[in-house]
Length: 361
Image 1 (cartoon, rainbow, N blue to C red):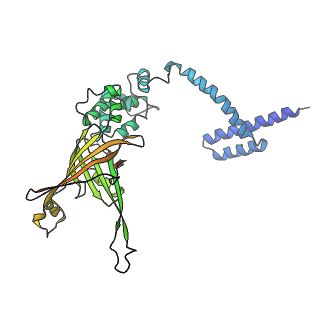
Image 2 (tube, one colour; image 1 turned 90 degrees about the vertical axis):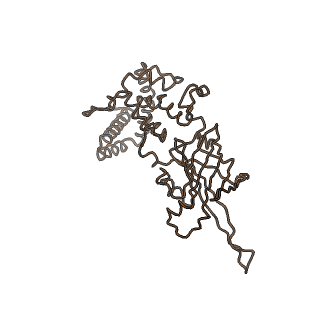
Image 3 (cartoon, rainbow, N blue to C red; image 1 turned 180 degrees about the vertical axis):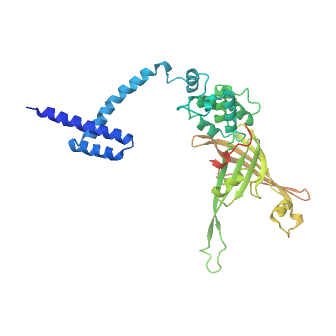
């Protein structure tokens, strides 16, 4: 006579076998067969799914231990730098094809040519974020993306004589570029200004005058060669940032200029177009020639972190406007930047700025 315990074990084992068969059918792309196996298994044992999950949880640490033993030749050490470990593991070849290739694979290229391609990825716009994304492809690309020569070239764009400044950054050009104050070029720094303006009071009721909420934006677009564009507009960023990709595509009222880095201070000098140039571009006919003047904006910005992100915030600490008319008369207006009347510029990455590379790094 069959014992009750043996019958229960047999039913449980049969339910587990059916459930695992359903898993295999689902992996093979047969959902109908998998559903039938699941139904039969649950009919035999309603708790079969929990039991299989428990068995897999017990078996998983053993599999992990076996995998670690199989990869013992890597001699992995948590304290070891990932770059140094990949250098030790990888051979002369950058990467290997996962599947059999009929065409020439990327791994056949010599390292010098691969690094030159990576210089085009960074380009003259210093798109180092895309370079960091390339480093996630494989170990070989990680090594190429961390190549010191790439980061040295990027650092020399901002600090031409920075070869003696590596000591505070443990000799790492990459760490120097990330942590040392500089400006980000694949995007715009945006300052949103809003205030309430009182409207004209009605002669009937002076106590209930209208008010208006005024909102406009200041945009700063930096280039790695020292150029900068500034624009004041009431249009939101979605309509403006795309136009600031180059000086040629910028709106007519943009102010071009140049900038200079000194520590964590950023010195900007921007010039607005003269009235004659504006009249030519807008085809103004009636305009007083005596009103032609040149306006220069001088700004000093302080570079700092924004939510733990390096160089994402620019705070204006000095701002003046110099007017020069046709008779060479100069008038200077200096603004008092107290009580947070001038909000900071916050960086916003613009994807279209990195769509194509014009010049190699």
